[in-house]
Amino acid sequence: MNARTQTQFSVRLAETQAEREAAQNLRYRVFVEELGGAGVMVDHVAQLETDRFDPYFDHMLLIDNNRSEVVGVYRLMRRDQARAAGQFYSEDEYDLSVLLTSGRSILELGRSCVDSNYRGGIAMFHLWNGLAQYVAEHDIEVLFGVASFHGTNVTKFSHALSLLHHRHLAPKDLRVRARGDAFQNMNIMDESQFDARAAMVSVPALIKAYLRLGGFVGEGAYIDHAFNTVDVCLVLDTARMNDRLVKFYQSASA
Image 1 (tube, one colour):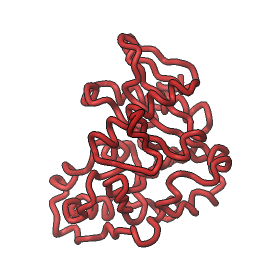
Image 2 (tube, rainbow, N blue to C red):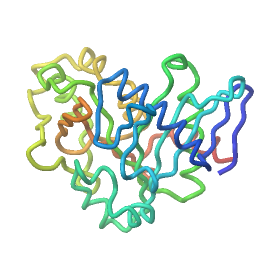
Image 3 (cartoon, rainbow, N blue to C red):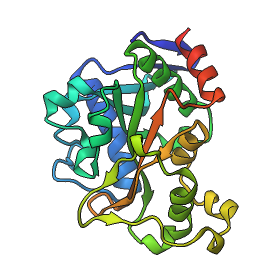
């Protein structure tokens, strides 16, 4: 993947350990310091958020060229990388059988975050632009990965989770399912019991972005106490994506 420079920003894959650590440091600031996450491999001394899967992922970096700093990251794992790792990261939380046995080219997304000083602007657009190019280069057909509500109080998210279940549940051939004791039924209340517009306001921005582009959610949420989150698994099928996403991918890969 080539660097993509648009005045202030460039997007490329990490090539060195120092670049991977810059991504892990940003993840530490966002997921550990801001959101209260933890993990057995978090390095509080070096301020790095790491896990055993990091060596197998491609790490996409958003760089502010004016400061030569990493200000946004995405982790990307193809099927061949997952085989080397022993599994996809999401398999600890979700049964991915419908995707793994589909015979289609799949890509796991994760650890998406942007420096707090760059949110609400065009930074995320540049990351999505780089992702679109990556998808085109690797002929990816289905994208998936967990995204989070921050906190583990399910009652707080009951309206939003119910909305996702009733209006954005993945079709059977894409319907991954949350695993085990941490499974949280998202069919908490009937549609008549919540205001859809108000419920959507409380859905995190990243999840809303995938839904606008034609994405779905898997069955059930997963309560991740270590990361202090309630996770949903998002699935985006490029064969089902809406016209807006088609145009975006075509322009990004041109």
